[in-house]
Figure (cartoon, helix red, strand yellow):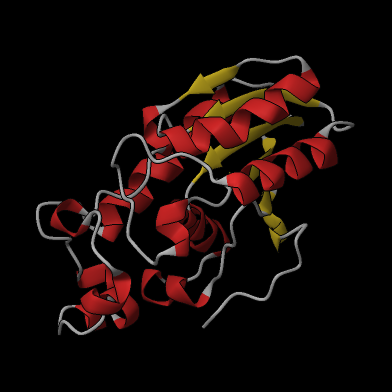
Length: 205
């Protein structure tokens, strides 16, 4: 079907402070994030990319725009690429949330987790994979396109396409401004690249 480049948005202040941004508006890239976005754009500038899709959230659109500028394309916002709906947890500090008993579901049995006032991981996985496959149907076979989205949606998509059980998807890591590449085709799906990060920073565990 297609080669899909799944790019996580670049750094923002919520990320550096350990807060769950979720779907909150007006969260923008910080100075380092803008540098990361330009680096990704330069890395992709010579690839035969046909289209650039993005989560409609500011931090994703701001990551996608430099790529679009390099390739003389437009950024097409897609609601299906939006971040997981964390409901009442949006804006909360991750370290404080980790003290809650329900946090163990998030980390170890995510298939059983529904965020208070938000969606389940199963719902989020269905949404992101449905969106990717819809976009693939809009492209010719062998087309390459970009989807700028968020860490959990990327991990959930990868888990689905490589046959990793949902309860193990947290074993994957997706860094800010990283590139993950999937090939989806009639002969089978392939993970081409996982969490390729130009900064080469080792994430904190």
